[in-house]
Amino acid sequence: MKIRRVTPLWRWLSAALAFGMMGACGPELEQESLVSEEVPVDAEVGADSVSAMAGDRYADAVVQRGVFAVLNPNNAVGAPDGNAATFLGLLGGSLLLDMGLGEEGTGPLRIYYQGLSLAVIAQVEFLRADMSIISTGQANLLDLGLGTHSTLVPFSSATAYRYVRLRGGLASLYGLDAVEDTGGGAGATCGDGRVGASEQCDDGNRVPGDGCSSACNVEPGYTCQGTQPSVCHDVNECMNGTAQCSVNAFCTNTPGSYTCTCRPGYSGNGWTCQDIDECANGTAACNPSQVCVNTPGGYDCVSGSCPAPWVECGAQCVDVSSDMNNCGACGVVCPAAKTCSSGVCVLG
Image (cartoon, rainbow, N blue to C red):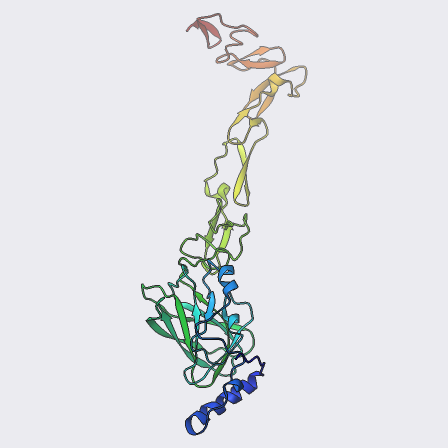
């Protein structure tokens, strides 16, 4: 028989207190006055949620084994979303949550809760797949008022837990939004804002180009700190000396990288930059009475004779000490087997 009845929270608490007193000195209340929805023993609620939440660190299903007075128990499945299961722990009532096959918990348990009217200390049991107890702890649900709060229950065993059982005290009423394994084991989810064992970073999204990639790895040119969530900063390669620009180039920092641009008077890709000979390519602006002398990154306009080792070739001064095409005079090329040395063709 299934009973579907929505009961205001104040009536739940009133009925619970009445039940507790009558259980000690009088007849029991009918079950339908306390439980809004009865689910067969061992039936798992939220089968669709199991596949939808596969790979995360949150409970995948509610396992109805001895659950007592829980309204909308499936709201405790998945990540915290503001929708909570109304949990009425009464005379040993409990709620059993399945972390999921292959997603067993390895670290402390964070409990997200809301709607407290009084502080609650709940017992937490960490269970193996065969329902045997690994360890127990206490959840101190002390934050009152509106909104979702959280508390951490320590877990230090080397044995992973498949199930988590929450037991309430006498007439404890609160909303359970989610439970989360904070160990970052096989259940780590990229983009949830918590760094798992297989993640280098997790900034709470899966958007690339902000330092933490869509696969939760630190992107080149960034450094990330923090685990809940990660905060990533661009690395300034131009400032820290790791840029590979030419000495004749400007370095400009960009998000995650940098650019190299040859300085005026040089040409190239920024990683290699060669001097531009303005005297030879005709871009120099010397007066007709002057001769052009090429310099690194520029040129000079000289009046009168060209300084050694340059020789005057038309309107420009040419260094003949190393240029085989201008050895001793303009346009003179050394014959085969000879090379230019200090402006003279000599045997090589």
